[in-house]
Image: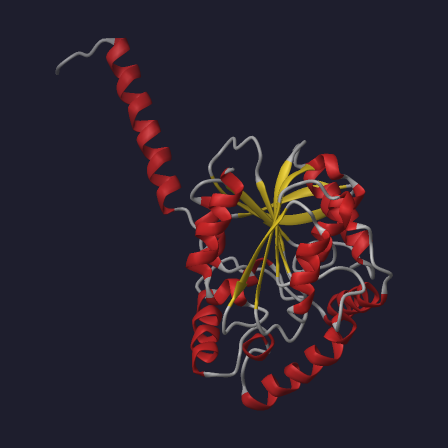
Length: 304
């Protein structure tokens, strides 16, 4: 039997380990990444972390109304994870995360800040969609030193036009979904023309790609509390967003029914260091309909 030197064995073992880690990272996607937990001020939060390990400034993804981890668009999270570490988590009382869901956006922001600090991060980038971008605005106002760059999508400022009507629109489209055997997001996020319906079907298929270890669905009480928080946000007095100095990328469709697209333009005017994208022939879920273009633009923005 051939004998090998100890140094040769160590070299082969190290190479094997590196190859194994590289191979595993290549096949790891949001579809199969494990779900982890962390205690945030005594409450167990559930999250999924994907992408480049040891990223000095990770990306925190803040989700929308009614969303659990399984409602994240895997094309967007996988796309951002190609260049960054991205972390998505269930808000308090949502999905598998413990606790009672807050009834204000400000309290949700405090929870998000607590999560970020519990993870040990001193500086993060944020990507927020819809309600998640409301939360992002509050984080910028509460603890601006925690944030480097922000991407806000499908959103608007506190007291923005029509935001107080989100509950009414949501319940109506939930009824439409029930009567037509469709997910309400088919109506809430997309235009009801040929292009919108096609994009809706593709998006809804993507968020079902994960078949194992799926998250718990949001309960009715938590969903109701989120709607109360959004309604209050819509009735709130406008905030002074001129104090936000971080670079902000703002994106939406040109026909957003949930958070009217006029809010997108208003937000961009009120945040001086902002860039604006408005996707034509797209609704509230414009970033899902245009996920390829959005990921490219987001990566360029985050890399600056």
